[in-house]
Image 1 (tube, one colour):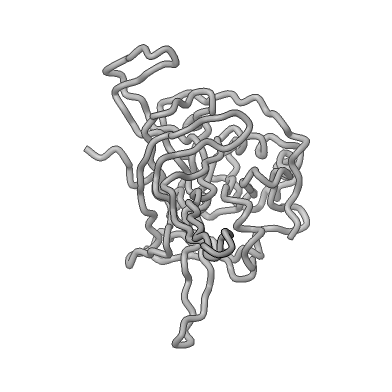
Image 2: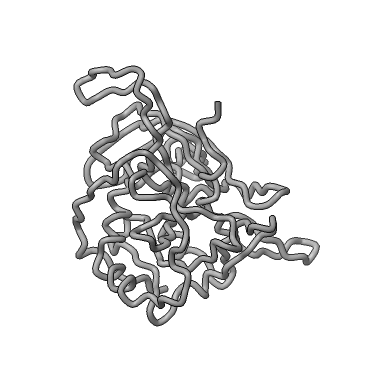
Amino acid sequence: MAWLPEEWKKMIISVEEIQTQEDGKTEYVPVGTAFLVDYNGFNVLVTCKHILNSADLNKLFLSFNTQDHQIHRIPFNTLSNNLINWVIDTRPEIDIAIILLPLDFDKWDIRKLPLNMFSSYEELYEGDELFFLGFPLGIKSLSGIHPLVRQGIIAFKHEGGPFLIDAHVYPGNSGSPVFLKPSVIDFDAKGNVTVGNVKPPKLIGIISSYIPYVDPCISVQTNRARITFEENSGLAEVFPVDLIMNLIQSQFFQKMLEGADPEKKWGDKEPLKNSGTEKKFNPSNLTNVRLFKK
């Protein structure tokens, strides 16, 4: 029995960069991940802030499948205008960006995640199993946009920053949504065990990047590092969904919702179904939110 419905993969969007190959041909290469959230019927696109800061937005595209089994691409430089813009956290260490996105669900084969599938930071425990979806290492499917699924566990929690997961994350996974893995065993903070009730999958955060392991080579003569080797440590930073909700509930984003053009398709399709109830989030640090400017 599969625990990951195919419909879930349709809320994952590939962030692709158009690149010129050695033979002179151009190719769309996955360089990041984004996903769709439903907020009161509106379509909210979520990804990492460092993608906006580090890349040439004129070369980036949102890529996803259409209902007639083609690939549709939206240029990044068309996503914002005088009324709609990316909303980010001003703190450099918070690596999240969101934007309101008009979508044609009649033509495009995409879905969005409801808020009742969000799980707040306080509900997470070290050792919880998880999975995430994204587009690492430029790997592409031959039959359209299809994310890779990987798994791990929560390795470390601490207040005031991202939590760490024990999982191999690679370039292209930036922006990947992270979910609690479904389970019939549930532990509370005191170690009490409940067996039998299915613990449903919940969105718990967004991947920023892996943590590198740095190995310097020290010169015998100078006792200084001459060469530094770097590799994937197997740990990655994940920002909790609470910080996504901070951006959604900010005055900047709420003002955009008020001024959204009703003629555009901001949200005309039901989100993915889930039996859970919507989690109430208390917004915090909303003064650190602003619009993105390159």
